[in-house]
Amino acid sequence: MLNLNSTPTNMTTQPPQDRKIFFLFPLALISLLLLGTLRILLDNLKNNQIQILRQNKFLKVPINVSENEIIEENCNVFEGKWVWDNVTYPLYKEETCPYLVKQVTCQRNGRPDSFYQNWRWQPHGCNLPRFNPLKMLEMLRDKRIMFIGDSIQRGMFESMVCLVQSVIADFDHSIERVPPRKIFRIEEFNASIEYYWAPFMVESISDHATNHTVMKRLVKLDSVEKHRKLWEGVDVLVFESYVWWMHKPFINATYGSTENVQEYNVTTAYKLALETWGRWIESNINPQRQKVFFATMSPTHLWNWEWKGGIDGNCFNETQPIEGPYWGTGSNLEIMSILKGVIEKLEVNVRLLNITQLSEYRKDGHTSVFGERRGKLLTKEERSEPKTYADCIHWCLPGVPDTWNQLLYAILLQDYRNH
Image (cartoon, rainbow, N blue to C red; front, side, top):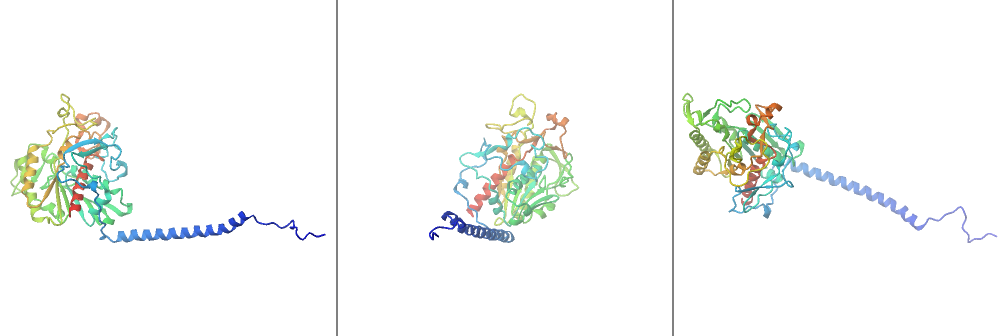
């Protein structure tokens, strides 16, 4: 007899859990498709916003100056000490900045230590704001900054480029060499960082950027005519001129007639040149729109008996800063006094970047035998004679010039906050 309540052997019933999976799988698939579509839409929106921002060169983004970036008015940021900091310094890596010339790439050139990269300048009584490349670029939006001087100033220019280039897209910047200038352009910010070769600041026979005479020097103490055309209209000007004046105690120069070449005492010539430069500043700078800085002398460390009594050498093999009070004979106090005197008399505000004392301590920061001489890296034989070939004038990068730019950045940031 047929049992009507029995279940046929060829028919099965799905367990409840399997039925849930059966219904949930399509829902999960639809959710993934929706999420993928939404992500594509958001990415496109983000890319379009970035493109709009980049195309709109006049869109300014307000800079937030935090409390810990404010420098107290009574704090002299140029007085302080160097402190070891291998956690947050250097501010960039030598190998990540392609804009450094061979003269300053000490690691690539074989320097065995990198300690010189890990010292941070600490002012007495306050802290320097850490260099923020995006804030610096925002302050430079729609502006030009120009570093004017000799190869020391070129190092400051390269330092600034390296400090900001890490946050700029590869396709959004370019560098152009138009002697006597180098121009680093940042398209997104409609800004440029520039370098201008003028070792004496006034005109001279050494004004060609690459083919300039070193031994014979002739300076026109009363003229900046050739230079001024490319200085005019620049928003931030940073001048420097010292080392080229100090080759000998006297220098050949003209004042007035170019036929009347005379031998001038260097300090007298320097003062006349500064006064010529000052007249141009007063007649051409608009204080409402332009800022002018003058970097004081970059010290040399040519004789280590100045910090190590009784030893005949130079900066070669130095790996630590000098501690305590120190002022080397390579930094001329009379020149410093002349510079301060001329600037104080100007009706236009020119601010001193007083880099001399803080750099005096850094006997360890020079390129030494790990740089160039006459456009070529030193040979093995030349490196074995540091007394003759060590360069104790120029600085390795990353290194001391980064601090000069950090000081410049700090001052510009305070200006931004106050205005």
